[in-house]
Structures are given as structure tokens and as C-alpha cells.
Image 1: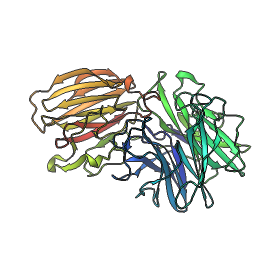
Image 2: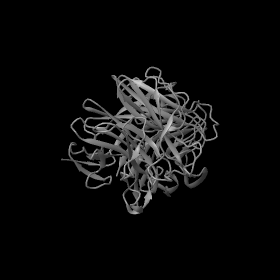
Image 3: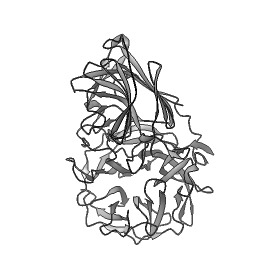
Image 4: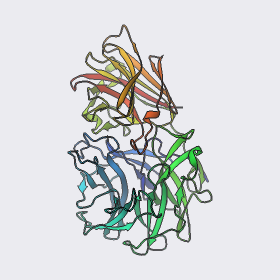
Length: 515
């Protein structure tokens, strides 16, 4: 009997999909507008996960430049077939279509999940989002979600299925709707996976209720992969929708299942964590749930029926304790797998500097304002804990630049503790696109290249900002909380540089300490 703590992937890791190859498990999650995209993790025991890289890991592989937050890379699925890994995903653009990049479903492949991954193979003639692949012998099927052409209620979607040519991965016909939700009037039947059912036949696992408090996991069964599918009479099979605002875990849904090779089944699901009844800054995270079987029907978290914060289960070891601190002084000369840029790769705006006896630094080119859709110079990573201290050490920027520490939910919602070339410090909260200066001050006697330490102490939705250990301001970060109305993406944190591309600022170190 082992004991582990959820989430098994902390920080904004929504829409998890999982597969097993031999003794190793592989997991992919959504990444929206961030690049490199589609982060991959690997594990040998399901509870301790290590970053492996990204399915979209190099410039030129796929363009996301100019996309607004909460668009981009939606709900990938990872599968392994014929000695090859497949990741299928959707690029979702703006509702008005006003974006020059390519949208739709694509597949990337690799022999080794660590890469390199192929360029995208685009799947023509199929709309919607949340795609998943099913391999049945030498046949390949694509399942996904799309709003119904003639909706009978708000949020009425259909789960469709289409066979693909196994060589070209192009549709062999028109998609056919196989599911419209377990409940009459159910909103957003989505996130589907078609999986073999124990004992024969097929099982459709899908989310519904929308990816917020009413989220749920529902199941349906069919003898043929093309249907008809009959809903489980106990639907939803897993949900926290009835627990109210006092629950610690909410918005449970978007399940994928995997067998562990030893006769046990597990599900990965997304869920949010509540603090005093309110959603926090981290967004949707990856949680692990044991699954039993009764009469060929899945039972999620047997005997409990909920996603636990601490779970005791057979088949997993005691989980290793989380790292107490992350620190990057950039001495490796490369960006680790957790660093991202908005719509472009870090290598496109940041470079490494060997400062000799002074160590290493990253040089950030000047970029657009954090509220802009133009190319930004934000080197961010997922905020890993609801309570955390983040310290950035950077040099005083040039006279025409501003640089600092950014907490980013989107271009419309972010908080910046910034420093300009004249030594002026300001803490600015942007809420729904409107900036408000919460506090400012002047650092005197600094010279170009002198190091300054910027720190934010995050405690739930409260924040305290410091410069070189001196308190600057206290802030309420509620405007940064992600929600379906304003955006799906949790908070990323890291250094930002604003100015002309030829202007540069040196970042010495980033330290993130969960509390």
C-alpha cells in the first residue's frame, strides 16, 4: 500500500492524457499559447513525474505568434502504436477567425518520447477540438468534440468519430456524432477518449458540464467502435459538482485511463484547488485516481468516489517529497523543460552569458508590453504552489528599458514588479486590461549592471512585494485567478523585459520556494 498526494503534477497542467509503454508511463498536458508546447512527463510509478521535454520543442515546428491567451494548444492525447508515439492536438484560434496562423487538428510523432518530434501532420476536413486517437489493429480512429450544427440548448456539443487512413492520417469519410452527453441538456460534452472495454467492446470516456465547478466524468459503452453508445446508468461516474465551495478539490473531469501492467487501472483527471471557497492562481492541475471495475464498469476511487488530496492505494510507492526549492542561475547554458515563452520559444528572445567569476546570466531582448499580442520577452514557468516565494535577481536595465518579475495569467490579467533604467520601481496590477499602479519608489545610487533583487511572497490570493528586502506593497491577486469566462490558463511567473529588441537586460537568477 502506497501513499501519494494530489496533484501529482502541480501548477497549470490541464487536460492530462496518459499511456504506458513497458514499465514507463508518459503524460502530456495542454499548454495553450506557450512555447515550447505540449509538455511531456514520464514516470515509472505514476506518482513521481519527471519532465521529459515537449512535443513542440523547436522554432518553426508550429506558429502561435499573436494568439491571445487561452487559445492555442488544446487538450492533447498521447498514444503509442507500432513502436511510435503519437500526440494529437488542436490549435484553437480566435472566435472571429482573425489570426493568420493555422488552426485545426494535427499529429506529431516520435520514436522516442524525449524527441525529436516530427513536424505537424494536419488533419483536413474535421473541425472541433479535444481530439483523441484510437488504434484498433491496423485501423486508426479519431474522436473529438464540436458544437452541434443545430444546437438544442446552450453548450450543446457532439462527440464525433471518424476513421483515418493509417498512412496519411487523413479522414476516410465524414465524422459521425456518437454522443451528445449523458444528461439531456448537458453542456460541453468534450474531452472524449474511446478505449477498449474489459471483456470486449468499447468504452467512451468523456467530460461534461464545462471545465469549472460542474465538471464531470461520464462513460458510455458500445459493442462496435462506431456505436451506438449507451450511457452508464450511474453517470456521472466521477464529479465534485455536488460538494460546494467548502471542498478542497473542484472542477474534476477530463479523464484518461491507463492500465499499469499489473492488473490495476488508473485515471488522470484535471482539477482545481479551492482556498476558502475561492479558486486559486494555479489553474487546473493533474490529479491521479485509482480505478476499480465492477461488472465491466469503471469505479473511480473505489469506496470513496472522490479525488483525494492524500490517497492510499495498492500498486504505487510512497511518493517522494516535493522539491523544497527551485533555483536557476543558468549555469547549465540551456533552458530546462519548464521555461516557456508567450507564442515563441525562449531561444528566440533570450541567450546565455558566461560572466566568468560572476557566474552566468540570461540576456533578455526587449519585447512588447505584457498587455500586447506583439512578441513579448517573458521567460515564464508555471507557479507551482498556492503559497510560494519568488525571487528574481537582475541587473539595472538600460535607460530605454523596463524589466522585472511578472505574474501572468493572460495579456489582460497580470502583475508586474518592474524596474526601469532610472531606478524607478513600480508594482502594477492589470485587471481586464486596465493597469493600476499599486506602489512605486526610487532606488538611488544604482549604476548600470548593478544587481537588484525583486521578490514576491504569495500566500493564497495575497501578495507582498519587496525590492532588495525592502517592502514595497501588498496586493490582492484575485484578478489573476483563471476562470472559464476570462481564460483557462493558470499563472506563469518569471522575468520580463520591455523595450526595443536591440535593448537587453541581464537576469542573474530565479528562485522559487514553495511554502
